[in-house]
Length: 171
Image (cartoon, rainbow, N blue to C red; front, side, top):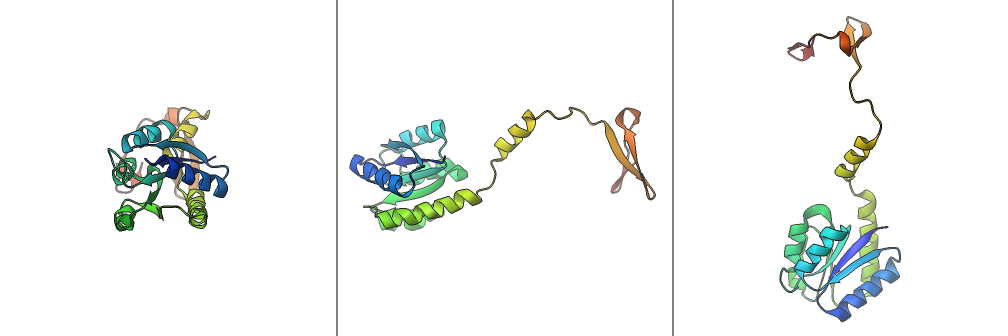
């Protein structure tokens, strides 16, 4: 189940956004709301949401600074009453830009865009590597496949004394 952080310093607007999201995406887990930029970063670090809905004008660190700090680890949607920040928002990698008060039809479009992004998001390399490390795989190499002319042979690694590299070949 995906999770989303809401960072909004106006409680009524945070509640409205949460309600609109619940209608458009009932299975989305909500983290927050965070009332300022520092609280948003703390919640993002502790809950690691996939999505962040950030107000641009937050006390302390603003939403643009929060997005910059989070980097590409979270899909960002800016929610603000000011349309003049749109270019800066997209420069920080925003998925979308919602103007307050948020309309249900716009939230539905954002949700569709986010779902598409989450489906096509690249694999989390760290998670893949940890799953591979946890598997019971042989700890050491036991055989080397070698060719001599057209013939292929398997050589036990215990029988190898050394490898010699020459140009693009290994002997």
